[in-house]
Image (tube, rainbow, N blue to C red; front, side):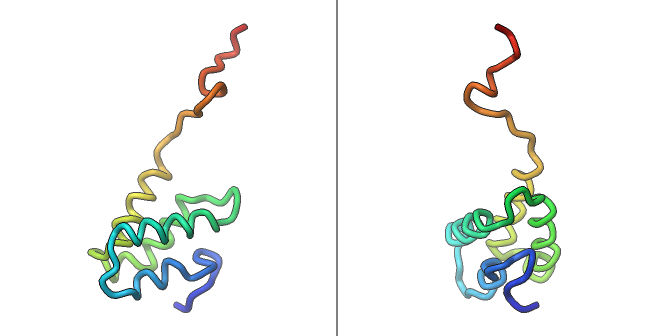
Length: 92
């Protein structure tokens, strides 16, 4: 796999797996940068799952694998809308 494709356009996740001694905090920062550059409206759950399939099997104990798993769990969790939209029940 070379860096820079539809799943990891900047090669951020690819490079994170190549950095020796990288910590979980650094991986979270890289993941956030990746997520912010992901295509708008993209299926984050599918993208993260593809990254895990690509890298996680070869490096199950890598901190980026743990970050990707946590991201996958968050992407799958339903969210309540905040602000007035979360409180608006159509009454009034």
